[in-house]
Image (tube, rainbow, N blue to C red; front, side, top):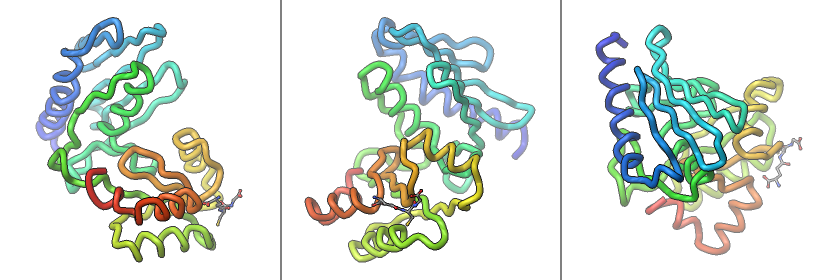
Length: 205
Ligand SMILES: N[C@@H](CCC(=O)N[C@@H](CS)C(=O)NCC(=O)O)C(=O)O
């Protein structure tokens, strides 16, 4: 990616994020942009900072309240910013959920590279080798015609397991997401199947 492309995509994503933030009560989320960094301050006095990192062509999101940071790289095929820990966390969806948790308000940034409204949230299944529950989950999704993306996690990759755990609070696989929404493991997927035949995963997100 050239520096010009990087700057263009950074500008685009900042505009998408800033627009809905301008309309929100600053007592809930106060946004301030200074030189390539957007600082969001919340009612509980914690902050998160989204900053451009041109030297590595990334966007970094530091979450003070969680004591963590995510590093997002642009994926031109998906036209999305994806975290570099291999978990496939997408910046806008992640930020929507995080800001809802902090402020109680669901902002809509619109998923980059996708039409908004009717397109279903992409289903992601984190799996390992030799995992009967993962096979059952994938079989069920296939049977119901739900397209999904599989992310394989190695049993001995502690970094990936930590990142998975921080995101879901789960220590087992499979871990299944619809967009940024955690469905759960196979058990929760099977329950959802009993209630709606997984129709909710095929449309409307
Ligand atoms: N209730 C879970 C069970 C999943 C489960 O036990 N997965 C196994 C692999 S098939 C696992 O992650 N084991 C590792 C562990 O229990 O630490 C589900 O329905 O997904």
